[in-house]
Length: 217
Image (cartoon, rainbow, N blue to C red; front, side, top):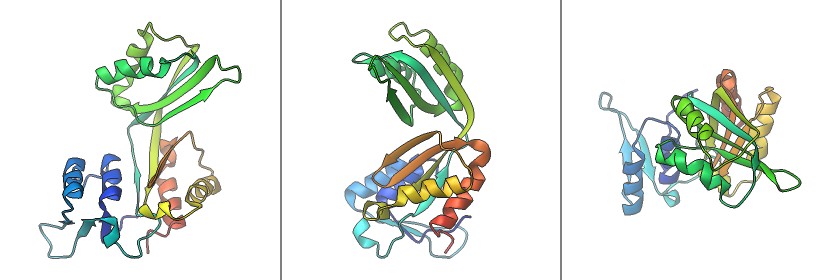
């Protein structure tokens, strides 16, 4: 399933490195992007062409999706029936931030009467116990139920081609549905779509998406 990428934009590489692709430090890519410096990543042991990290305008005929990433150590946290009022989200996330807990995917659903909200987000599993304690000791929020789910994985497809190509979201979701993979949380940006799924389906999801977006060719 792994194939060398010949050329990639700064933006795509930033997304991939922030999602766990251990190739480049995000700060190095950002510095190169700001100063418009091309980076070529090559092997120290084999004399062979590597991957060029450059600006979008230098990339010709790039694919819709450049790469797919997955995580292995995420957990999902859900607060059900939170009393909705101005600043409630800040009240939940501020103490987590103070304790250096990184919150990733966030989904909020408001009840029909507008009085309650369900809030779901993801964190690293190593921060789960600390997060549970912080939320339970937080006197600034009221909720009916607190749920935790381990063994989940975030699958992301990245590509600048998404900007000008409609239907990428549908194709991703349909490919997962065809393989009976349920989506728990969705997060999108201009060049990235991420979904949270059961960890046991990670490999199956990656294979399905590689096939859908023809990344092996």
